Amino acid sequence: MRRAFAVTLPKIEAEPLKSFISNRMCKCVVRNLPSSMKPFPFLLLAILIFLSPDARAAWNTKEIEGQDHVALEEVAAAFGMQPASKRKDPREIAYSGGAHLLIIKTGTREAIIDGVRHWLSYPIATSGGKPYVAVTDINCTLGPAMSPASVRQIGKVQTVVLDPGHGGHDKGGRSPYGYEKDYTLDMVNRIRKILEAKKVKCVQSRLSDFFVELAERPEMTKNYKDPIFVSIHFNSAEWRPSANGVEVYALPPLGSPTTGKAPDPILDRRKCSGNAKEPASFVLANTIHHTMLGKTGAFDRGVKRARYAVLRHCETPSVLIECGFVTNPQEAKGIHSSQWREKYAQAIADGIIAYMNLANAQKLPPRVWDYKRKSTDEFVWEE
Ligand SMILES: [Zn+2]
Image 1 (cartoon, rainbow, N blue to C red):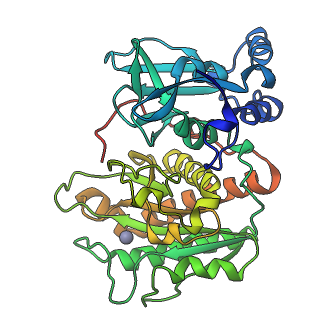
Image 2: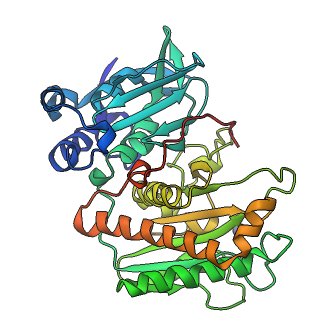
């Protein structure tokens, strides 16, 4: 069925692909190309002609398992991508071109977009032997990840509210060397110092070792002009000490499941204040994730979605960063060293600055390959 794109999902604050493409093409298609992917001028011209906004304003949708889907080849083409070389696993399909790289695995919610892992709301479906992606995932993940400048919910940023996770009686995770609550406060102090040196106004949800109620933490954003909210945590997985790496969370789109969970007809549809800024929150998460991976070399656990209280209650763009595992022997040692924390704090601060440059000056954020880090290339199990 052919259907107008904007009509498909009226409840979701999505950016029509029309504006993804027009923005992408006007502002950044050449400037933002990684050197390894610069197309020849004639190819670029062909893409520009093919992708004139009016030509791609509607999708050919197909309902699969109750969700509108679009053939992935159609979506890939809209972003200037062509099928790339075949991968060993026949369920994995790659597209590249137009400064982008997209790798999916059918039957899973995992997608490698422009070099970093993302978790979609719905699995990549197959119909007639072709892969299909849910319209929700085009609107809320693929589109904003590949064309962040076109997300209209991104407003100016004047204040960064930093939230050191846990505190007081709530110690958070525990490594052989210390508590998560102390590491998060130290990280926030470092991030703040780096940002303030660049004249960025910062405030903190706690300044020392005391507990602040979860709902109160995002509440303080209301006292400041044009804020974003960044919550800092460390991960724990006692049952699997090998678990390592970084992940950045944004709120899931309204009506969509959280990462690693099956759809929940009640919880997924519960409206919260964070919904209004969810697309901007995703771009903030995506921007910080690219920079963190690029600057630290950490394992890529992906941009994930969860309805954490601090994200649900936040009316401004908000993310929660899991900086590494206190339960992983190697990472726990790293986390305990001040050099390690300084490096990660610098990476997060740079990610925040990159988002502010996008929000305040329409400057596109760096991608992971701009830091000379190779794209994530392997698929992992969903968790
Ligand atoms: Zn935590």
